[in-house]
Amino acid sequence: MEERVKILAFIGAGALLGSAATLAISKLLSDPLPINNQCVGKGYTSEAVKSNGLPGSKCNGLATPNPLTDEVVSEQLTRNIQFFGLEAQQKVTASYVVVIGLGGVGSHAASMLLRSGVGRLLLVDFDQVSVSSLNRHAVATREDVGTSKALCLKKHFQSIFPECHIDAKVILYDSSSEEEILSGYPDFVLDCIDNIDTKVALLAACVRRGLKVLSATGAGARADPTRIRVADLRESTNDPLSRAVRHRLRKDHGIDGGIPVVFSLEKPKAKLLPFKGPSGEEENPSDYQIVPGFRVRIIPVLGTIPAIFGQVMASYVATQLAGLQIHMEPVVNFDTDHYEILHQRLIEHEELLYGTSMQVEVDVEEVVYIAKELWHGRSARDLSIKDVGRAMWRSVNELMLVRWDKTKSASVSNLILLRFKEADEHESRSLEDIKEEEPDFFVRVTTVLKRAELEFGF
Image (cartoon, rainbow, N blue to C red):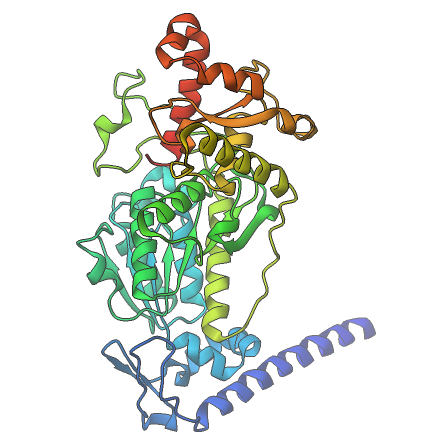
């Protein structure tokens, strides 16, 4: 009996402390706060709202009282206010965030930004909710199947945090919709797109406009949540999507980093599944594309990983908006020296053979991809394909990168790894000779290079 009384006393004390914390925050919210003459985003200005003596915000043409004056809202965001502090939470609540791509990653990112108290959201996606997407979508139910992803999120979000101003656009991001989507000086843009062309165009536009952007790379075909990182695009590894985006941004837009990305250090455990048409036979996926350039084949996805990607994105953006500096764990690559040797050897070979290295279109990061992912650290003539290990570094003094087709530039999809003697022999022969005399070798190499071409979006 005495023990039960003690337990009840503890419960009562906990409830009393919780109530006291809520009353303290309500008291803070009822007191006048200094008026901030500048909102978090560019182009924002604040104006005093007489109600409750609290500042409101006039951002992007909106003029609404600070929602934190509402008793229910302040209670809903109590834990955030306790974590960030009141003034920092006000910055979050006065913010405007654009989320483009509302699948497994984007829906979770948008959902947690909403729950974090972001005051205005623009949700953009041209696609619809499918039955197969329910394993990873943040809020969609079977009743939502067939409806727009953007409108689906807006509907659910309005019941979670109705004070948030939510716009939903059922459109595809491209050059014609750029102004409609990116105007209004958003504080942050979240790129949750999985199409290379669209992703590159969006990131380039954000850099050009001076907008803060956070990009998600490939979340499919992975299972290890402990290997997810946030770093500069230049540091992302083991991800075919980020490799291709990095290459295109540098080649087409002269952008060589400076964009934070969420990525996984884990090597994908599966590839795109073959596409089968109505007959059940494998067919060309391009014949079934509704939107040109967008994949119709399936990437195997463990639903938890895109969800974690989205949560990481939301956490990163929320802390940035609140002004809380988080120092991300650095990405360390101990093998750089080996790849730098191969890259320098390629440059010297090009200068010796062609008199210039101007046609070398790869950097050290892309040499990593070529050596590890395409040729597994071994000569293209080796039939045994094993994981890259110490054998590569023992034989690095015997290997070099050379063009497969001498009439084309030294690009990701035209470089093979050979031993020195093999490289000399290769340079003395034509592709026609190789195709005729070694058809199996020719097919094997062209298949590998075609893979690089596809992964880099050439």
